[in-house]
Image (cartoon, rainbow, N blue to C red; front, top):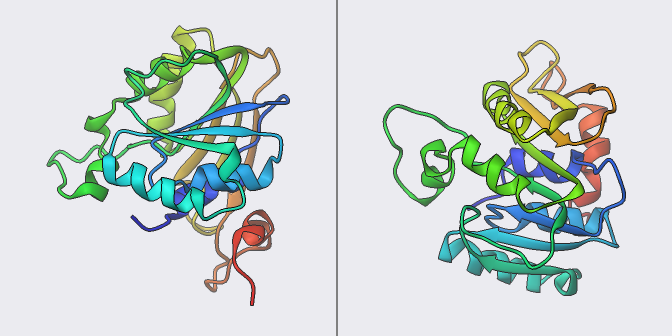
Amino acid sequence: MKVGTDSLLLGALAKPEVQVHRALDVGTGTGIVALLLAQRFPALTITALDVDTAAKKQAEENCAASPFTDRISVLQADIRDYDSFQPFDWIISNPPFHTESRPASGKRALARQASALAPEELVASSLALLSPIGQLTLIGPPRYIKACSMTALQHKYTLSHIIKVRPSPQASVHRWVASWSRSDSPLRTTELSIREPGGAYTKAYKAATQAFYLKD
C-alpha cells in the first residue's frame, strides 16, 4: 500500500485538545499515521493496530526503520475485539469509508470498503477504549463523518473540531478531519485547500506537511 493523501492529511493536521500520552492508530496500514504522530509529539507512545497480516508486517518494518521504534507498538487485531489493559487518551483512524454498491476487490480496495467496518462499529469500539478525557479523531467524506457523529452522540461525545479540506479553493469540500470528545467547548471549524488553481500546493498545505518530506 502506498502513502495516500488522506493518511498524510490526518497525520499532519490532527491535534489533541488536551495533553495526551497514549494513542491508538486504528487500521494503521503502512504505519504512516503512527509515524507522523510520533514525529510531531515526542512524548506520545502509540499502538498501531491493523487486522491484516501483510499490513502489520509492513507497518512493523517501517516503524523499525524509523527513529521512533521505541514509542510505536504494532499489533494485529480487529478493533471490534481489541481490549487494552489501559485506556487511550487519543484514538485516531483513517477508516474504510467507501460505500460502493459493488464490493471492490484487492487488499487496498478492501481496506477502503466501508462494509469491512461500519462507522457505528468503529466509533463505538473506539470510544469504549478512551479515557474520560480522551479524544477520537477521524478523516472521511462529510457524509461518513456525519454518520460517525450520530453514534458518538449516542455515547455522549460531541464534535469539538472539524477541518474541512478542499482539493482546491473552487472545489467542494471532500474530506473532514473531525474530532470528538466529552468537552463542553463550542465546535471549532477551520478549512484547508490542498492546491492552488494552477495546481501548485497551497502555502497552508505545505506548512502542514513539509516537515514530513525527505529533503535533498
